[in-house]
Image 1 (cartoon, rainbow, N blue to C red):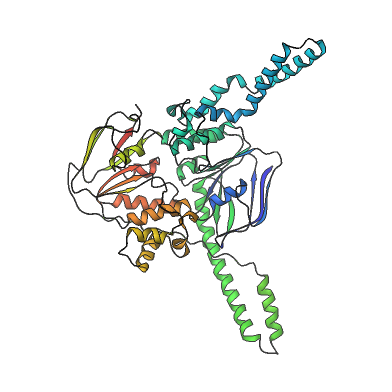
Image 2: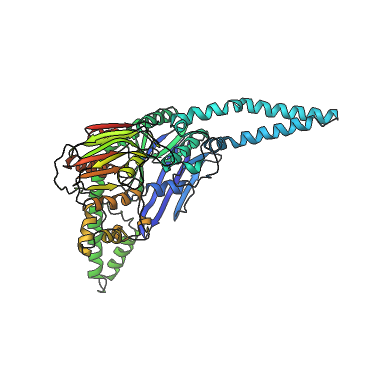
Length: 515
């Protein structure tokens, strides 16, 4: 039984055609991964079916009565609520029902009429039965069973939402979504803020989920483990494949090649017809034939040009240094009001590649910000070699002005480059043509990450400090980034939740564990 039908979906974005009369059917119980290159329209697609944005043409039809929910990591939460109060809101209708039951009990103590009392008793009995059937009296344990799986117990259920990090809020929103007993869940990059342990828990949870979910993810291991179908967004179309990500790849390359051949064949035919029209429309003897060809040309459903892969050339310039005592961290305590971690100590040579891993919110980002002197240490000390030249890429996609273009952002940081050189440097990371001149706010997350990496391509360093650099990057770009970091001759401090990415690069692991 289909629960979502999309017919002839058409959507423009900044005059670019994202979807060209695309069609898709999602059936009850399907576990679907959504993939596509950076900028292909994955998040736009999710926002369309979630009713967040209006589409330009076609139909999006849900089966009536379907309960669906959307993981929107940019949603604003009420900071005055505690973590538990926010999660309990998933069952607000049951709490409201319990409030009505309490009102009835109070009223029963005041009623003297036997008939009225009998009505109240029957009503209270129905409510009591429904609350029992819905396991209302075990709700807190149900909530914690799910939330603990995502590490919310490490955050604390009495903690105010206003005090949580961005990653902790994302985990909290995901926990609430999983608790809501939905018919279909729409998940946009749910693993971005999860550590390895919690990705494994989410994988098991989704595999046991009896209903439907659609998930955008660039984590191919995760997709392979949870997806029974893959929806690929490419060339203005939305195409559904049976099988996990690896099975999809084996089919996609063949179909992409066939599409390109069909496109080139159609373009040649269009050119041939247009040439005939141009040569013959002015001659009386052939004008009729030319007009006929023109009508035929107008009826052709022109194929969209094959998607341009945002190829990436990452290569981080290195200034030579050779030191056994390149970075020394000793009894360093990091945090804000209180220390997040036990005293941290480690020692890096100028060639060490260090992977920092640990649960989300434990303090990994805070540790990097402390090392970069963006926030003060609580106690202890750390020291970089006097000739150290660190290059730092933050996890958050923060720009001074998101209305600026990638060109302006880059040029402000490298004023010696002329316009042509700036264009060339951005093109190296896949930001070509209009992508480089668009406002940054109109670029996808993956395209914004590429701006940061284009700057890194032009920053001389001997230590890279990278905080979740793969977030938002598509598979091809991640592979190129992995290769560039592996080939980098200097030291690396890498925070990452992707085991396959970090494990192949780094030779030393530091496990960040809360106090």
